[in-house]
Length: 293
Image (cartoon, rainbow, N blue to C red; front, side, top):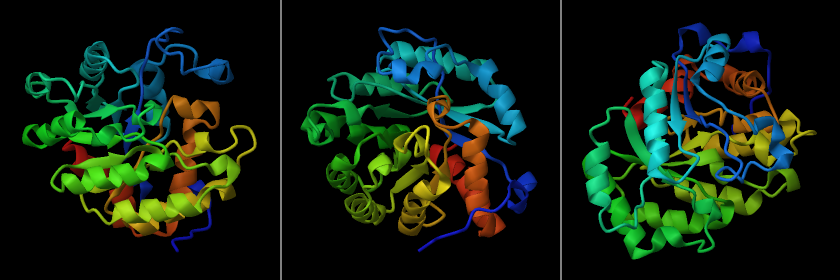
């Protein structure tokens, strides 16, 4: 097992020499109807979050670039995020949304291939009533078209969908996939065994990466401690190794449970005993390679 006791922030060897890329962050202009998933328990993020709000945090935490990930399933969202990317040099890429099941999906992929910062797409599979939606022929047809345009695919799921995801990624061995938020295991209730096995299985597919992000929000928001998270981080590092994992903040969603600094400091301390090359891979190089930043 990859278990590394957390040290101090200063113990993160060579941090100043490593280019840090946050592979998963969001922007939005809060709309209570469109963004109904941000309920009153999450009132701390019921407001606008834009590039000018994130930039100081990146400076304070030594982060040089980010990847914006969609939070609304519309092409209006793509236009909004591409505009944010154009206005902020620190944004290196965008993961948008297209209707992968649409007959004209290839036309849309052709269109978005004209935007250098559009790197890939995502669908909120975790919220679908049909837990195996990703295996529908129309959805798989859309996935089959991504590779020729150089687009990646972010897999946003809950643990019950890892088996379906395994079938999907095996069907497209040349397509680059990344699992968001380590598939959101039930950290708050201590569920790990089934999730860990499923993560190990999907990690055998070398075209699949995993973002160590969004974990703190699967724990108890107010009472979590680092020891609650370590077994899950260990499991992902053991399964994927250090060449197919990447740092993501999930800002501003993370703010319901932790500040940007709390989360990155936890990971900096976790990886402090790894080699400088391994740290560089996790904190930046893997995301750069995966997304072609």
